[in-house]
Image 1 (spheres, rainbow, N blue to C red):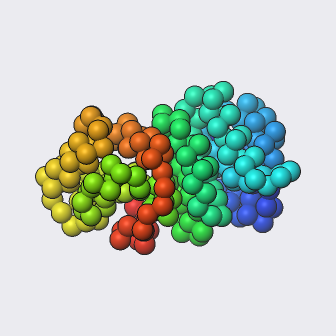
Image 2 (cartoon, rainbow, N blue to C red; image 1 turned 45 degrees about the vertical axis):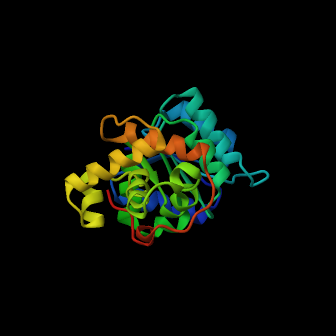
Image 3 (tube, rainbow, N blue to C red; image 1 turned 90 degrees about the vertical axis):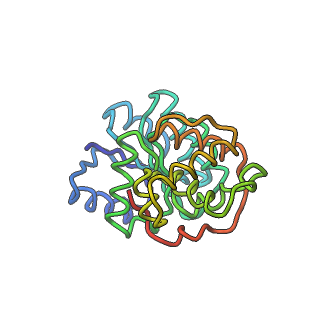
Length: 227
């Protein structure tokens, strides 16, 4: 799987290149700024990209803007954004395009190698991988407040990219209970119940982006993300 990496920190980019190489990925280009990232995407047409939110010269939002522009030029281009902190505005910009193949992880997730590479593969496959800390800050707004505590847990796990079976295992409830909770979530959020999978997750994420805010961390968010 071919990867384009946009990261100006040489130590981190070198470490990521070695880590990914040992896990079956090929880093075909490392860009240190937004123009370099755009050129690398045009040249290599990668299977997935990893982008730091903050790149030279101002170290503000060059990375996320480059990622959004790249997805505009190449619809569906898989992008996994890495950030030092939860930056809700930037997460919202990325989620504005709800076609899948998107992820937003905090950089400390990289040290959890299996979790990080699983998230990268999920994004490359057109799925979603959101850091639990990001989800915790997106879970707010009046309609979400109407959810029960269990429904909020189910919604957060859906947004992280888990399927029904994984949600059931995580919360120790039956498949029927998961299906029932998901039905209630969609009903209360005014979203139609469609097919399971990433289309449903993207619909939820798009809704949460429009109603983003801050909220207490869900109980499950302290555990590592699983597929």
